[in-house]
Amino acid sequence: MVDPSGARRWVLRTVVKGKRCDLGLGGLLLVSLAEAREEATRLRRMARKGGDPLAERRQARRAVPTFKDAAKKVHEAHAATFRNAKHKAQWLASLEADIFPVLGQRPVDAIESADVLKALAPIWTTKPETARRLKQRIKVVLDWAKASGYRSGENPVDGVTKVLPKTRQVVAHHAALPYGKVSTFLKTLRTSEAGEATKLAFEFLILTATRTSEVLGARWEEIDQDAKTWTIPATRIKAGRAHRVPLSPQCLKILEGAEALTDGGPYVFPGRSPKTPLSNMAFFMFLRRLERDDITAHGFRSSFRDWAAERTNVPRAVCEAALAHVVKDKAEASYFRSDLFDRRRELMDTWAAFATAKLADIVPIRA
Image (cartoon, helix red, strand yellow):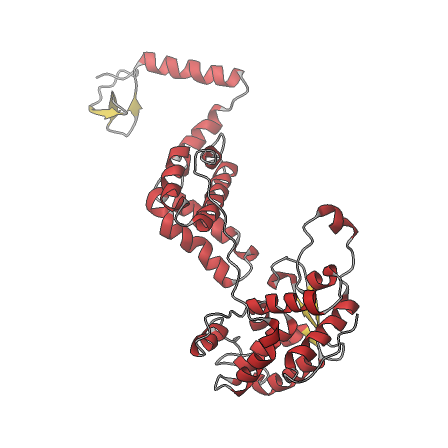
């Protein structure tokens, strides 16, 4: 074959996308004159409509990530927003277990509603809560892919919502101890052979009606013993806003015992090393050794809430604020500016006295 300059050149015959093309030895792809004219016409038409032929060419050359790679990028970008290390690990682990086997190796621009349906259908009725969370995570990854320029059009997750079967959402409550038995449990806790840090932390959790992660991650810099206050930062609160916890006399006594264990470390309830917190399995293993599968550490929040509702005249808003619950009604929340701290202090002092009283003791409940 002779090129336009008149020089003779050897070419190789090859097939690209089903069409035979001539590939010069120098790596130049040669096409027919008709094909070149057709491509030029298409690009002119695109430019007249406001398109950018160069941008399209750059996009075509851009490597499109697989769903797995995209998910890892999203996970890394959101690392600072996860409530705790466990939630951070679960976010990616759940995708690896149920979604990556189907979508993991597919380029994000090639995923359609049928692919999402294929990934979710096997677990939609058997693991409904997990499936709903995974559907949301797939949507986030594909939204990121669109925002990053790797795909266009609607999110394919939206197309499967109407065809997936309806499932009944069953709320699984944490096993809780009746509030009348809390004082007996605390006696068992105090006389048990568990580590001192575990015993102090568990009682502190019960008397403050806080969450396991909040107690295990408590640092001395959050404690103001003079003001009798523990301020949990927003980064460690489920609601995402700082929460002040009034400390009862019983809680202050627990902190005195904890100071002897910290050895200058930052955590109130240290683990094997003063520089690390108590294991997040400490309470679970303690209850397991007691063979108490009818109790969970989180369930003591329910014990407190039932006691407050049945044994006090404290307004509901105060009880919910003590649990750091967010007011869901937007109209009510717009008028709810106070954290009712003084009212909560009185409530938590009374709860601590009730929980630590002897069975024969009568604790006066003020209206």
